[in-house]
Length: 329
Image 1 (cartoon, rainbow, N blue to C red):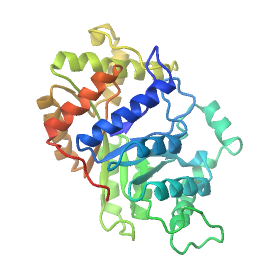
Image 2 (cartoon, rainbow, N blue to C red):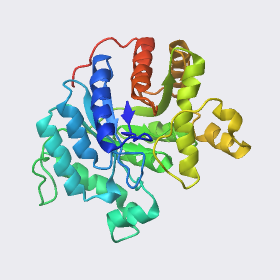
Image 3 (spheres, rainbow, N blue to C red):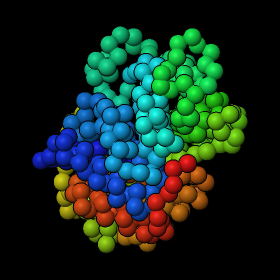
């Protein structure tokens, strides 16, 4: 599952972090395999800016679930710093840490400039940055600089993407590929095909491995699930309108209140979603898996009320047949 550590209206980051840990502990008992957190900056409704610190917070409070970044936006950082941070995490929580990396800034242009502080072309160096990062984790790195901790540690690196660029890079490097279909599905099928067709086996991975983002809003009734989904739908409209804010409370009959352009936007960006009862969610998830042949789904449920969010993940686990914690591997 993917957690953006949402900050709901009327709440703050401290409460968000409490909810994140509570959610991680629950989904671990329900049998989820991974718990990923995403790097965003300057977003009033997302608290996971210091991603590696929050990963440590979650890993310390759980025992079996894999915890990772989905992802770290590598152009914002020195590859050495990320190697040291995730080498530290791997040393603290052996065989439980994942590192997904992406090339987007995870912020608006002004915030991106504040993060990088200099070259506008940093994002163009993403393939070189990934290669440098992988070298720091190698048992015998080619570079004279060492990542301590980091060198020789088995930290799985994933390439994240929402376009064909990430698919091509993941295939070239022989790394697992995670596609952001939960909010940017336009190139989904093309990216999967490109990745699988051009994949080159590597020491990290013998065959293509695809994980896809998928929104889930599960409840006891379809009506309740539709009501819960309205928070995320409002948040997307606000974001695309240039007015990002905290996660708003749900509203009844949101669809009837939207204009044509807003409906079209939601149809486009949230097409990879399941909203409804457990049976409905399971049916939609299985249809999506059949269509894409995904190896894993990374589900996310941006729900305003924490108890309702917990219930959504529990209903999904029960519908899918998860029943026990997975062991770290």
